Length: 174
Image (tube, rainbow, N blue to C red):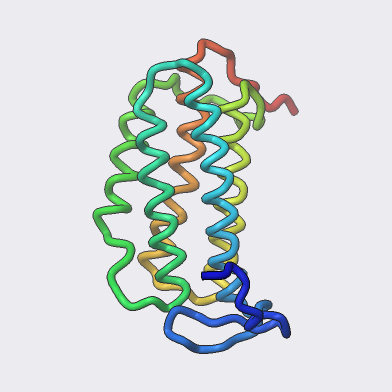
């Protein structure tokens, strides 16, 4: 099968349900941003792996990448139950476990640190943009809960990765 279909040459694409829409439609922007986030998380996984610091983070991020594919399918109108309440709960459990380890946050944290830490911050900001695009597309409330919790997870993960590596956090100084 050829990778090119030529069906999008005039600025239209198909949703999973067969509906043809403009490539500038808010739904395409939403799941396109999910796809971008997934790519950034792949880069984060590579940095976590290269850091040599033992952690469950790489396995968690693989799980997240699979859930982001599910989210993209849901946003493209594919039938099925792609994101579940248990997925939100899983993220919350990981957040709670990491927060039990890192020092209490006493100031705003600058997005700075080693490669894994900074990539986690980039993922967090792309995730927030993804959330805004999903709101514009009037995404299901469960999908919004998932992506909101994922941005929280990525923030706490950046702190956790910094803590694990023994590096100091960079605090905002006003």
